[in-house]
Structures are given as C-alpha cells and as structure tokens.
Length: 486
Figure 1 (cartoon, rainbow, N blue to C red):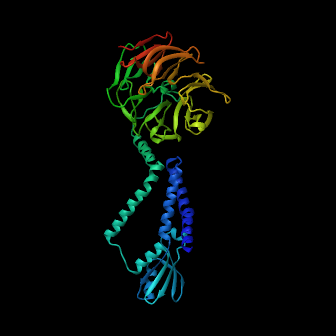
Figure 2: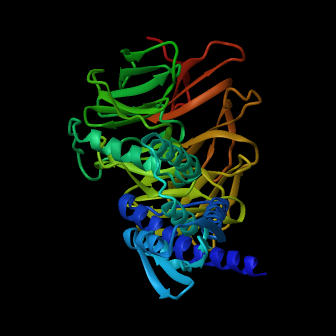
Figure 3: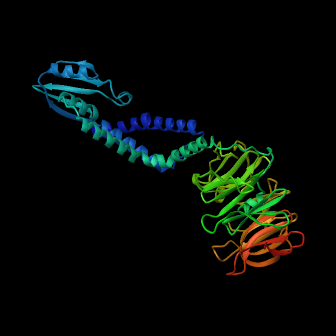
C-alpha cells in the first residue's frame, strides 16, 4: 500500500508541478516567438503526460540500498563535500536532503534517511538520490568515455522522445517561415501601384488563374506548361515561357510590369517581357493566389491549408488564418473565406490582416463569387447555388447537375459540367442567366478548363473527345467561338 501511495504521490506532483507548468511555458514561448497559438491533438498531449509521469515515478520512486562504510565520519565528510543538507542528526541515523537537482528537489519529497549499523549504512528515499549518494560513498567517478557515452545516449533519447512533439507543434515549419523572411530581406523591392490595385479577378482565380490582362496585353497559360503574351485583339503571340514537361503553371496575377504565377511548389514572378524570372516562395504548394495593394494572399497546403499573406517582394510572410481553408476570394478590403465541414461549415468575411471576422452563411462552399447582391458558389455536391446577402437568406439552386467550373459575365453565367473522365474537369460549355434560367449549351466539347474572362472574351482550353487540346475564345457579345491560331 505504501509503495502505491508513493508512486501515486509522485504521479500527481509530476503532473501538477512539472507537466502543466512546462506546457504553459512551452505554449507561451511559442506564441511569443511565432505570434501564433501552438496546437496539438489531445493524444499527443496525453502521450507526453504519460512519458513525464513515468519518468518522474521511475526516477524518484522510494528505494533502499545498503553500502559498506568505514565509519560515520566518512559519511559525514562525503555529505559536506557534495551538497547535502543535514536535517536531523542522531546517534544511529541521519536525515538529509540534496541541495542540487533544483527545482525537482523542491517539488517531490527529497528526504533521504541514512541508518548506521556496524560498518554498513542503509540508505532510503527517492531512487535517484539514493543511487547518487551510494556512488559518492563508493567514490565512483565516470571515465571520460563513460561521460561521453552517457551524453550521447541522453541526446539520442531526447531526440526520440521529442520528435513527435516537434513534428506536431509546427516548430519546423515556423523555422522555415523565419528563414524565408530573413532571405527575402535581400530581394529587389516591388511597390504596389496603389493600395487599391488587384492582381486578377476572383472569377479568373477560381479557374486556376489561367489568364490575366492589363491595358495593352493579355497573358494566358497554354497547355499547362507555357505562358503566352498577346495583344488585345489576339493578333500576335509571344511565349514568355514555353516548356513541354514539368510542373504546370497557374494563378496568374499582374502588378504593373510584374507577372506572378505558381509552378509546382513555388510562387514566382517575372517581368511582362519575360525577363528577371525569380522564385518568391518555395516552401510548398499554394493556391488561390490573390493580390491586393502590396500584399499577396494564398492558401498554404504545407501548413494545413491555412491562409497566408506576404509582400510583393516576398517579405513578411505571415499566417493570418489558422484553419484548414477550402476557398478564399478577395474583394475591396476583405477576404471571403470558406472552411469547416458538415454542420460547422461556414463562409466568413475577414479583414485583410485577419483580425476582424463576420459569418456570412453556413455552407461547404467552393469558388465563392460576390456579384451584385448575391453570393454564388459550388457546394459539396458540385451543385451551383446563389444566396442573397441577407442574414435570413436561403440558398437558391441554379444548376442541378455536377458543376466543374463557372464564371460570371456581365449578366450571365458560363459554366461546364463535371466530366466522367476524372483526369479532365469539364464537359461542354453552357450559358444561362444569373437566376439560372435559359440554360443553353454553347459548345459540345471535353477536357474543358481554365475559364478566363478578359475584355469582351472568354478564354478556355478544351478538345473533342480524344482530340488535341486547343485554346478557344468565346466572344461575350456574339457568343461566337473560335480556336486561337496565330
């Protein structure tokens, strides 16, 4: 019974006075250093509670050992020379406590009792202190190799024990962010044209940012591996990048004379004449890249689909929303963010610094577009809906078929249905009014993707079944479709 009570007492003391304060300190330092809360799954916290309690109990459980000694004076000499404090001195007994091992010697019952009998002593108390005193009485000293081996063994044990904590805490990722921001200090500075400037439209970004335009030119992605520059009348064609294999390009944005885009696990920029290509971000896959003023916003798959922003020159990379996010859309001075699942799914309005948030409606929404007094979106069942911008609004079903992608023109919606071929997203090009009426098929085609609204045209790539994928242009005024050929 006494053995059980001793171990129970150690477990409680370890949990209350070591584990919990250590956890609070760890969370506090992490938030102070990285300006974000540390998050763990409950089983990781439970694992480390078990490890800490087991270590405390095993190291400080009650134990008794006997040692041969020449006389009592020798014992007293050893105690005086090795930081032991005598609490009680009697004829056949000494009660001592270590002054080393702070703060653990204050948290647990550190009393050690020494009983003298003939030329032996019986030492009773916490196992670690009993073992330490026993070695002192035997005048044992570790060799240099022994100390080195013990140190290496301790380091290996620490790495093994702490590896789940390091992996779960995200400290490796935060270190990568710090390194990125440090390296970005040396980059060429790029200033925003104005605080109100945007890099591309939400409708285009929802369709992988396959095209973008400025006053004089149109830029679009061809066959996934090329970026093309053309004039507004599509009379010229210049390849800024032209490759046949590798990672595909997406998320085109334009700021002044700089073109931004993603390729694989990098976010890049180059001048609109194809020069000065540079990597701005290389920490993993990102998508839904938006630009507003001096900031780039994107969803970061390497950090559990959290929302990030950074300056146009790659500096000040920072997390602004730490929840798995399926979609973001940037309007004026706010982000629309869609996250959560089932009953907890929600679309919110958030300020650009992530500090202010407001719930708009509860849906598992993808490709959210704010248009006039409605929000348009694709739900978890690939149906196209819209909902009025009022608190009591009910979603209105527009297309009761599986939607692959859509975009909004002046007064109509253009969309494609989900293809039966899992490799390619769209089947057919359709048009309807904003309320879902007058649904009309404009083109019978397969493998349709990259709906891009530029000027009075809608660009997209598609092909007949088993045919060559080509770039096509729909005139939004005449509904005439032609294949781009230069």
